[in-house]
Image (cartoon, rainbow, N blue to C red; front, side, top):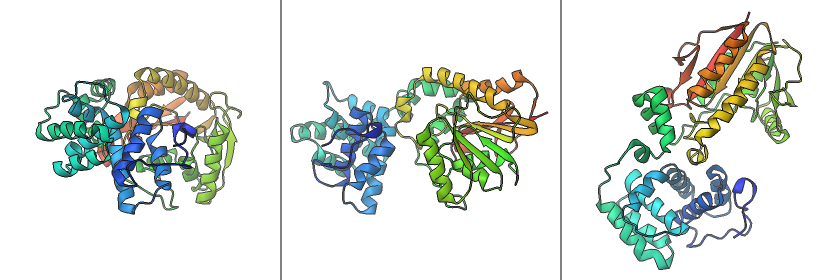
Length: 387
């Protein structure tokens, strides 16, 4: 087995799957890498599948097992830890989690979930895995709290309940435990509907000069360019600007891709008719797309992200021409990164908020989409006109 590659994912070369090329054994291998090497699920799964022979149905099953078990990791640990009194090695832990996920969250019959888990467990642990999973199958699961039932860190559950209200927060968290819908634009670009609604809110017209100051990977920038506007798509990292260029070529639009730090814009004041700030954020509205993200983000990260958002939005406001439009969006649901950041524009002066109607819920001077509202990503949007 090779060592980890970019982003902690393994190289495909020399890949060996212990236990044979069956879906559950492959899923187990992916889970160990995510847990032990910090690999990202959305990178390690496709790379692993590229190196093995499986039917399309088995490929989908591997993805479902890895993504689902990763999302429900806390819940699965609670299910099995009731019957464990010693430390468990990572490979066995992965098998137990996946077995519990199949039993409780996928509704796989016990004989199938337990027997197939035993088959892919290390020989020395097969009796142990069999005993633990049979007890999980026979026992009930009276969840002690929402954090364990829904499988999120306690701070995420607490913060969303405090800020959205428990009913909406729990509904949002439940929705983000489901696999996301796949939506495509007319040009074939895969982009969630919520992001398309953000692009529409920019209201770019043919001939407008538009700046997308945090443009990578380019979904919104290419959508803006398709309106006939002249788009300057900027990002701080050259590699990410390369993604913008690639996506512009793929969708057949023309735009200007620029390497620039949104906190220190190289453009003159008042240069643009429209400015979009789709800012870096905690991503707490898109956790259904990133199965391991809930275990990576820390509550303290939100403070640093909000500071960054303040700097970017303040700088971007200065780029808007009189009568022009400033748009701020983030794929998160917490106040610090949405209404609190948007207050920067009110403090600066010279802008009037533009009312946002359906499908957005009122949220401060802007709007918010919860994932359960329209089966989209969770998103917040604020629009102003410069006076």
